[in-house]
Image 1 (cartoon, rainbow, N blue to C red):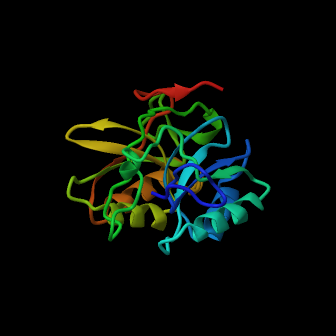
Image 2: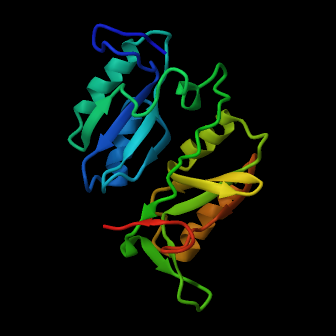
Length: 218
């Protein structure tokens, strides 16, 4: 945590940027901006249609990379806001989001259990029932012993963004949005199966649209 800098007078984490995207920004456009700063999404929420994300950037022990990354992010038309100010985070709570030495701290499980209420992002059940499933969201449960570094590596491998979370005894579940793998149940199920085979993953699931977890109305 930095107390201040010439660019920012209040305390801020030096390796995390809060990024808000324009409504309607495509996933590829979001990934393009994230990749431009060598960032890794470690949390966020589906605010409106654009969403906001906590993006961790490489840290050299100073605040210079942070403000350089903010300047780069602000140059993208799909980025509405890039700032070091993290809502509802103070120095005592910052450890929930920051990377510990060796990057072993796990991403925080979001308090929000809200998923998008968008039927266009769903596929019909392959089981002959009326349920529909999200075509680009996977629920992931990690073992308690799985390190933050492993979790972030898996998210980065599958270009996943944490958009919601919840309780799944005896572990917590991360709801992760991934690039649309093809618009069929088989396609997203294959992604879930691949993630499930990763070391450190206890289980995966495909959440139902308008299922047990809450959905966000338009």
